[in-house]
Image (cartoon, rainbow, N blue to C red; front, top):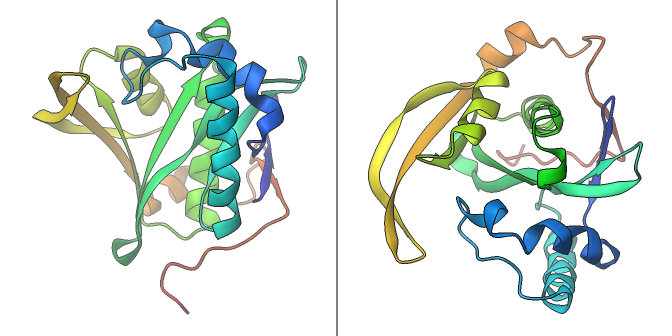
Length: 201
């Protein structure tokens, strides 16, 4: 699992020792309102979830990072790829953040770093993100990161007993690379690289 560093953030694999920091936000209804999962019931549940993820990391093709705020040495959320379409060079990105850090640009900073990794390290052609209609905050993050709104699928997902309309934003490799050259001064620092070749070359 590569480590990514930005101006304010340190992004690394999640560990069971993150359970207290994760539970702090994962237990809140306002955080999970527009997500597919319910608030975590207790810290033990959070720790079991993080222990489960260790097996996902060992597979070598799981890219979901703990987002650590460097100044506070605190895990404040997660950001990474929720799914891959290997044959078509496509991936979906997802993120969640502790409400104490909302409105400070942290989610945008993390998403931009993952976009850079996806296009320059994984060689993706398209990265998309989806949000439940009503979650204007999430769509705003997508658009700040250069993604284009592509439309809404009505009643696409049945979530927590309700059919939800789902919006999609996306960005293509050529669009991204034109405005984010690999050697740009504010490019994230990526260490412990492990390249993932979708096409088996």
